[in-house]
Length: 459
Image (cartoon, rainbow, N blue to C red; front, side, top):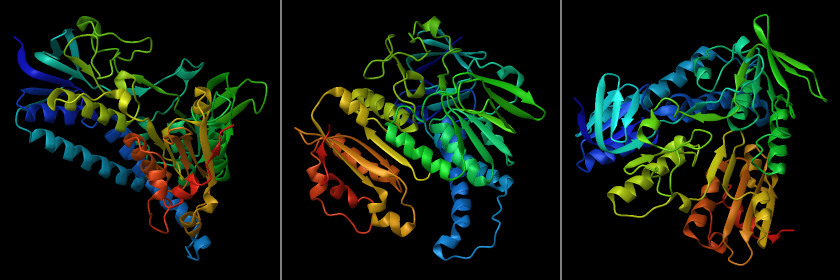
């Protein structure tokens, strides 16, 4: 016999718990099903643990640079990787416990641990239990993509998830993948003390960014001792004693790179293969992502898909915004849409890259008349005071409306300052609103009006 609920949320990642609580608070009898641990990728092996590790790595980096600031620190600087992991685990555990306590204390909400699979559009089986619901919300997230790479089955490898179990210092970490996840781990472990080599199949790092952004990031990381091998279109893996060799039978560069450990960071896959979506009639695209409309509804009435699983965003903040859109439309009588949001994200290397809106390449491709301004971080007083002048800031503006089209802020506090521009973009106000405001000195944000003062026609 089935158990009946008004609402069923599958997956306790970023969107699921908040939505389940809102649904329960609205008077709906709600169930939240999770097969692993609450919090999803962000809490357990994504944002929170990686940024905790980055903080430890930065502490080591700043300590090594103490002499630049007139601070004498006895060398060499040591890193206790076991303690680094313990600190990371404690932060993660606190987040999980807080989230679990919140869910457990919500009246009308039932948490069920197990693997959910659809039997029909309104029926889900969780192990031996059958749950029937009037509304179903899918928030099952994604996982690391494992490429069909020759030799992969014969070598030990790590992913972003299994890296969370590492409590030692790899002698030489090989990273296949030169995008956001790979680069954050590259700088992190280089600062911990590992040799690090990054292998990227494309012609440059983080290919979705503009070429000068990619080049600047590569230069920043190379200055810290990270080695890069680009255009590696013929990668093979082989076991070499206790380590791994990446063979690169290409036309240029070294033919192979030997390392002690291998990290695969070549993309993500949605967790849709074992949900029984075919029994519910829920449509997916060629990559396995659940297709949704502008309000995150699937092709099946009363079934929604939120977070990484819908292919409409691959970040914690997009997942949470999915929750906000669904809750606002379903419970608050609003009409919010995915297409209303401005794309924004960050690359959390040091210094970080803060991004909002369109890239320079995308603006050029649009054919519109636009203005552009670029400023090196050496112009920023806060950056000079902190001794962190790497990178640059760029803004793009529509020449007619004066609305901000996009921004790339690679530099100290770029991941925070970008919100100044993002808010103006969402509000639909011209850049002059920011330019005419009075900002605090000395900060990074105070240079944004000056940056706008340098706008020139985009050629």
